[in-house]
Amino acid sequence: MIRPVLTALLLLAACAPASAQVRGDIAILPGSAASELLEQCSRTTPKPGEGTWAPSWSDIAALEAALPAALTERTEARALADRTPPEGWVRQYVGLIRDGRRFVYGNFVPQGSGPDPAPDQILMVCDGGPAFFGVEFEVEAGRITHLAFNGEA
Image (cartoon, rainbow, N blue to C red; front, side, top):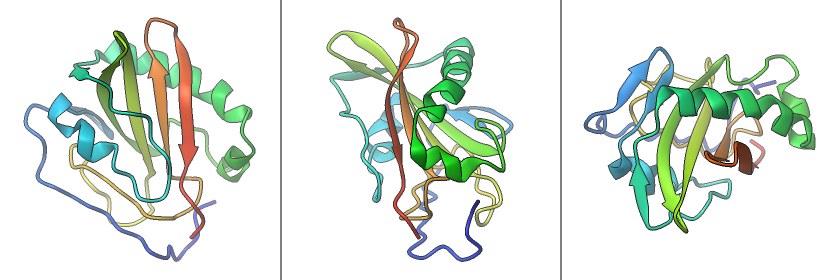
């Protein structure tokens, strides 16, 4: 459950990256947004890699389909009992290339945790608890390779 008062909450709403694709509360950000999206202040993120690419909506659907099973393996996800990701979260995705493999990194910010931000603006929340998290998905393998939750409020 999201705490009513989040300490050290920081939302960075930079100008919308050029050529973001948006559907509702989901944005596929251009590769130019990767370094900024991976600069989270209270959770680990994967390495950026040597390049970026543009994920498709079907790549996003595959990540979101794999997410519930990955979350059940983590004790931090028990705090999400009142809702089931990905629904109820603003989601931002960017494609990364590392060691010749394609990954999608997703940044998840729960709706209703503050001012409703536009999904195509880079979001960073310091602390806030495990309702704020990031996930990396290896596209060809069809598996979650990184899952990290924000620190406590």
